[in-house]
Image 1 (cartoon, helix red, strand yellow):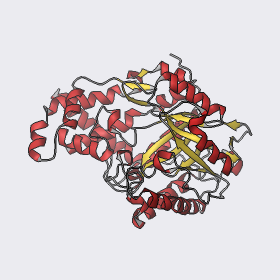
Image 2: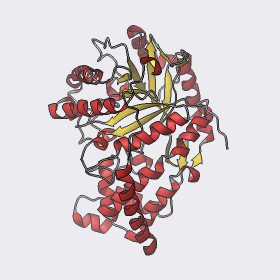
Image 3: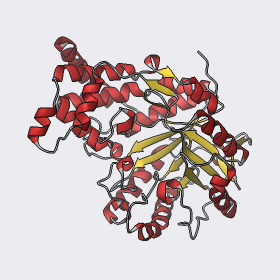
Image 4: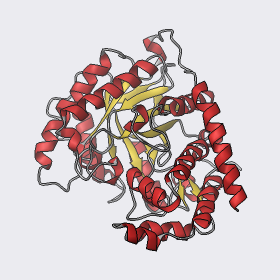
Amino acid sequence: MKATLFFFSLASAILFSCQQPQHESSQSEEPAPAEAFVRIEGENLIQPDGSKLLIRGTNLGNWLNPEGYMFGFSKTNSPRMINEMFCQLAGPDFTAQFWRQFKDNYITRKDIEFIASTGANTIRLPFHYKLFTDEDYMGLTAGQDGFARMDSVVTWCRDNHLYLILDMHDAPGGQTGDNIDDSYGYPWLLESEESQKLFCDIWCKIADYYKNEPVILGYELMNEPIAPYFDTVEAMNAKLEPLYKRAIQAIREIDRNHIILLGGSQWNSNFTIFHNPSDDENVMYTCHRYGGEATKEAILSYIAFRDSVNRPMYMGEIGHNTMEWQSAFRQVLEENNIGWTFWPYKKKDDSCIMGIKMPENWDLVIAFSEAPRGTYKEIRDARPDQATVRQAMLDFIQNCRIENCIPQQDYLQSLGLKYQK
């Protein structure tokens, strides 16, 4: 076992040192004509060939923005907390190697080929803003690999005739104030000029890089802004639309062809925040829903807003429910001209499209993640045998590869997607 760990560490270091500097952009420098991009006509999305597009697809959650529950963790539930826990468990160097291998294996070309084979037409790619800074994130500090990872998905989507939505799931300062944005428990993005500038700068950097890429359907500026838990929700809600408009203006100085997607506040559900909806002809809206009645009445507010602004509405996340609910709700969405992407594509066990089987001794990792670790003594007392848990982490990387995952046929059927062995 120790020999296995040594060779893994050595191979990882060699592989990473060879691969990272060799990345070259797959993006064309030639300006793409406007007609090459998906565009908006009223409440519809129109493809370059003139046909209507109803989004049907899935989210690549957990890959570039880890979430605890997808590993089986409860208390340790944000990227920052997961990284800290792994460092305490197995050491910072091993953890950095783990993350680099995780990114190489969790989503590969074969995953995108599988998604395309189901009849899906779109992938939503959640990402962390730190992939475009020199902050410590997922095994790297300087020289982050955000564009390298995105370029891979762009290429795979192009080869498989899929569209791609880029979703900033974790924004500078935090846009939500909960684990999903990797924040410190408050949406400081709405109050920090420094974070807002970085937010706009990163989107401009992405827009400049991908301005000629028609595989990308659009830029989703931020995910689920402003959780409902705070006394200052109304004041924060009032700051969201101006920030959206600031980012739109900055992006449009660089890229006028890509669609920009805006979510409502309070889990992408509150659209009353839009008092002066953008007159940008390439802006649409995105909502989320995981429960409640699977009926048209449950989404009447979304439909009413969509109709009032005469722009497309898209359900960026549905999932984590019964097959019956999901099947019924998906049909309601499609009958009302609302496309969707299922959350998530892949995670621990079930309630997803592709289930990951937990490796031997992963229960030790989970137990450590749940244990008190507020002092160094508590960390020492809770830490299991390092060789054992390091091997479990290596095994998780192997298990997350698509050839070792378990397709959840019932979930695919409930979404009206097909499964081919």
